[in-house]
Length: 150
Image (cartoon, rainbow, N blue to C red; front, side, top):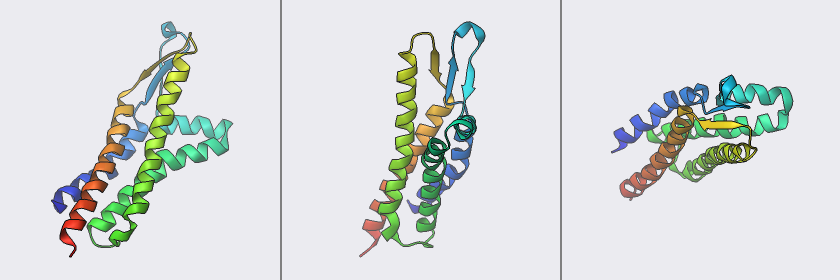
């Protein structure tokens, strides 16, 4: 069981960066002009030019929170960090989930604007899957530790 958790968690170290560069959304003012693809990284690049504070928040939610959680879980899996940090790692996972909520909210608001076309890209599903997988690995890690600790 622990080896499967290790492999699943370590695979997230590869999948998260792919999700950051994958297209989250395709958007266009009018669909006849073609759709622009927006990824986490391209969105962050745009935000740094216009709103530094929001860029810091999104960077923390989309990049640092899920990656730090994954690294922390790996350290717990390999007994390099005590299991007492798992609640803190759980909060990092919730921050990453907040980022997905913000993206979904953006899609709903922009679609309501009328002349704008927005579609979810495969990166949105990959990023969501990575965050959910990270949450599942956390839950299973906690269960495993409770079973093996006297």
